[in-house]
Amino acid sequence: MQCIDAIEGSVKTIIQRLHRLSAEYLLDDTEYIRNVKATIEAVGDFLQVNQEIVTEPAMLKKVLYDYARNLWMAGQKETGTAPETPATNGEDLEAPDYQEYYFGYIYKHGMYPR
Image (tube, rainbow, N blue to C red; front, side):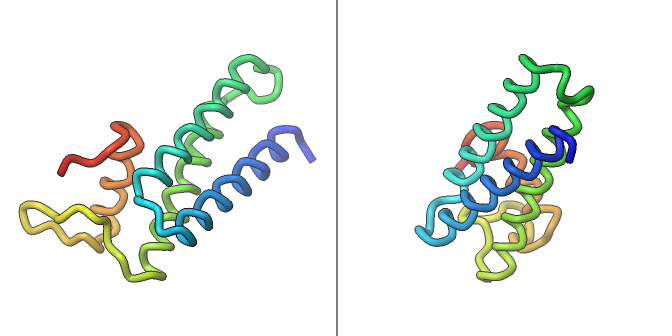
């Protein structure tokens, strides 16, 4: 196993645990997403210091981001819950495009406007 594979697998396991805790304790979406962002950024910081491990740290960060987002979206489908914020302009809260936008917005800004 390559070192990068071990890092990716470990971080995916951490993200999975964060998701499970978020669902178990009914945490707000922003809490899960901010924790995921902190985890992914910490991995990015580690890879910046240890550049010999991976040549493209941005690719790993994208893989981890996509994994966390897809896990969250799958959880939304399982529980049948849409994001807590009401849609504006007639947007469908359960539409995958809207959920991707919602997750990305919180990831970038730390919260969703109310």
